Length: 236
Ligand code: E4P
Image 1 (tube, rainbow, N blue to C red):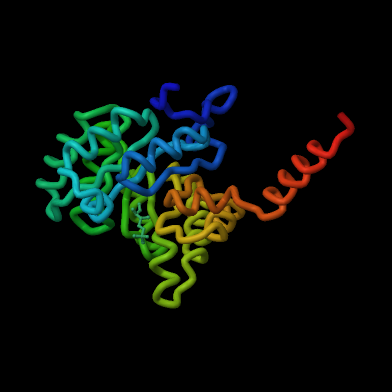
Image 2 (image 1 turned 30 degrees about the horizontal axis):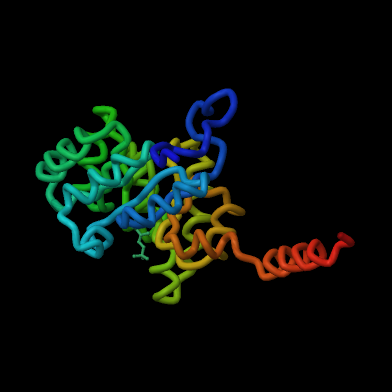
C-alpha cells in the first residue's frame, strides 16, 4: 500500500478564505518509521521536526529530512539552526527548495520575525516556534507567520498553564481574523489534544505515543473480546 500522501482528504468545497476548517493532526517526530506508522492510520496531516528530534534519529540532517519529504505530502516543518536574519533566510531558502510542502520553522526572536516577514513575502510558509506568550504570538501573526507554535507542555513543566496560552492566542487571532494557524506544540498527553480541540486550535502536533493513546479505551478492547466470545458460543 502506498504510504505517500497527505492522507486526510481536503475539506469539501475547498478551504475558507484564511484557514482550513478542520483541526489537523501533525506528528512531532523525525523518526521515519513513526511517520510511516502514523500515515498508515489515515489521519495524519503533516509533520513537525526540530533539531533535537533530528539529532535523536542519529541520522545526518539533510538525508533525514529528505527521507521524510519522500513520504509526506502535507506540511513538513524544518527548523533553521541560524540565529541571525541573513543566515536564517539563506538556510530557509535551501530547505524551501527541497519540496513545496516544506514549512520553515524559526524561533520567535527579532531576527526570526524579520526572516518570517521576508519569507512570507516570498510565498514561503513559516512556523514560528518556541512561543511562550500571547504577545509573541501577536507579533508572529503580524510578521505573516503561517503557523504559531505555543509550547504547551514546557509551560506546564514550569507551573504555567500551557492551555491558557492556546486559549489567549485563539481569542486574539479571532478578534482580528489573523490567518496565522495556531499549532499546539509540546503536547504530552491526550488531554492536551482534547483541550486544544475544544479551544479551536488549528493543529496539534503530537508524538506517536500520544496518537496511540488517543485511540485507546479499555471498554473498546473489552467490547471486542466480548463480541468474539459470544460469536464463538453461537449455535453451530
Ligand atoms: C514543536 O514543534 C516542537 O517540535 C515540539 O512540540 C516540542 O515538544 P517538547 O517540549 O516535547 O520537546
